[in-house]
Amino acid sequence: MDKKTLELLYKSLDEPLTELEKKSLNKLKEKFPRLIEEEKQILAMRQNLKSSKVESFPPYFAERVMKKLDPAAGKHQQIDFFDALMTAFRPVAIATSMAIVGLLIYNFSTGNLSSLETILGVPEFKIENIAYAIQ
Amino acid sequence: MNHNAQIESIKNGNKDAFNKLILQLEPKVSATVYGMLGFCQEAEDVGQETFVRLYKSMSQFRGEANIETYVTRIAINLSLNELKRRKRRSFLFIRQDKQELENYMSGSDDQKNQETKELVNNAISKLKAGFKSVVVLRLLNGYSVKETAKILQIPPGTVLSRLARAQIKLKEILTPQMENRHG
Image (cartoon, rainbow over all chains, first blue to last red; front, side, top):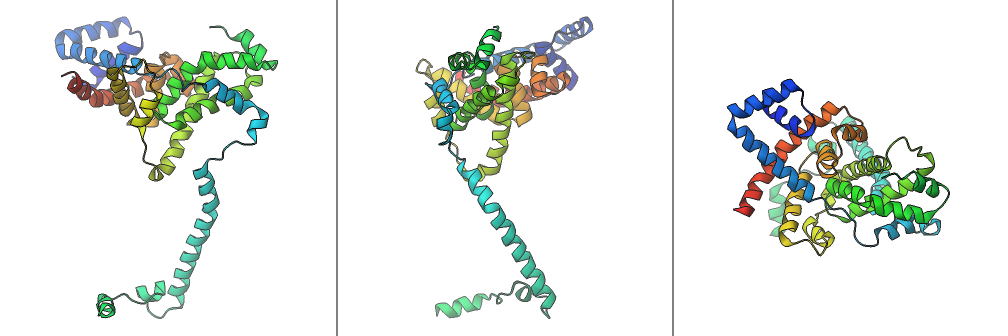
């Protein structure tokens, strides 16, 4: 079964087909019995989808909405914690990133060597130092 | 259902009429937000926000569009925003959808039905937002291709192609799982 055949089959489930398309689909169904099987599977799946929808919110939903619409209750509306956190920390994160980049550029431009130690301004790490510290 | 008289009453400040409208539109909105977001607390929050937005925009509602289509568009847009927000903070969360699903199921749902809902919910959650929205509107809510296109503001041809691709993906995920369950 090619892509076009499948597309025609799917289209037939959602839109009325033209006479030409109907004839073509019927011929294809005769030619490929697997197409009929495919159609059955899709219809069963669509039925499962339809029957799985949840048509109500937890109890007292309407009351909760009406409470939200009460102007007095509006003062106590909760602020989305994570959004507030992200908003609060965004300027700090930007400033810190800029400071780090600034320091790296400064160290790179003033240092004589272009080693990692010079750029980052931290002593070079050696595994022997740890071994020495442990002893 | 014609809601014109009810809408006029709400515009005149009748809150009881809006309460009734919530109850009438709740099935469409809950199917939309649970379909888009899965079974979680955020889905109910989005549902509440949908109705708050509807109430606030009621004065501008002229009645050219069907109120169901109008509220579904609000629900879809808010759900898409929530999905974007969720993507940003996904590293902070470990979701407990299964537990949430059990909490939200009505007592009348038998275990088999619950399992089907869980499988379908998991399969839909694996779709990209653009595909998810056409599946939710067309296959869960039963809107026509034309109505789906209108709600999502995309051409009907795009709805059809997204539907086809989404169903191929859903079939790949769901068919073996369903066969295992029945087999």
